[in-house]
Image (cartoon, rainbow, N blue to C red; front, side, top):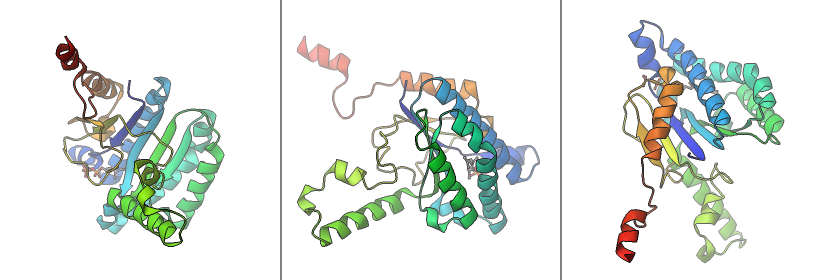
Amino acid sequence: MPAHIAVIMDGNGRWAKRRGLPRAMGHRAGVEALKTTLRLCSDWGISALTAYAFSTENWARPGDEVSFLMTLFERVLQRELESLEREQVHIRFLGDLEALPIRLQDLISEATERTIDNTGIHFNVCTNYGGRRELVLAAQKLAERAAKGDLDPALIDENIFAAELFTAGEADPDLLIRTSGERRISNFLLWQLAYAEIHVTDVLWPDFDESALKSALVDYQSRCRRFGGLDPVNEDQLHN
Ligand code: FPP
């Protein structure tokens, strides 16, 4: 089983359009699919789920859709916080949070604080998140430390770099799931996905259910992860 799953929840708008509904209804249905996925991952012992809720590029959507999404995030947090707390979910929001509406920022701080000691699944919600932005911010922080004389640039290695990312302390995802058939990374976890297995499904995010998650896990289990090394089978053959 993967220890950490990342998801690009694509296809909410298309799901709504196919039903003649406004896009907002697709996002609402998407929240339900996310809740189902979180619960299943938690039940099946997966340690972390990281979801791409809003990218730095999503501000370019029409203003009414952006404000709908912000209000939706607030409502979902208000409504779900007690059950997240009860179910031992440890929630974190990853991204440039200062650009979010202040009410949402307050709810994010509250949810983070109230679940910080929870021992269950780590649920990372990428909100105003961009992979390139994350890398630039990490480079800035390291450069500031170096300029102050607190860090020798020659000592910067992968661990020191990773500790400056929003995901600091979290193991990298083993499996990336992208719904609705798109085969792109879309500026998501550029550093962290270096060795992730990628599962692309045509299922639209609101339809992503237990059987879709099981298919992703079965696909993952069929992969041979070499991390740049040799396939263990071939290695045996070489030794024999
Ligand atoms: C993309 O579909 C999906 C989003 C913009 C994510 C919306 C966010 C959620 C469902 C989860 C919110 C969760 C929490 C915990 C606050 P799309 O609009 O790009 O679909 P399309 O490609 O079909 O247009």
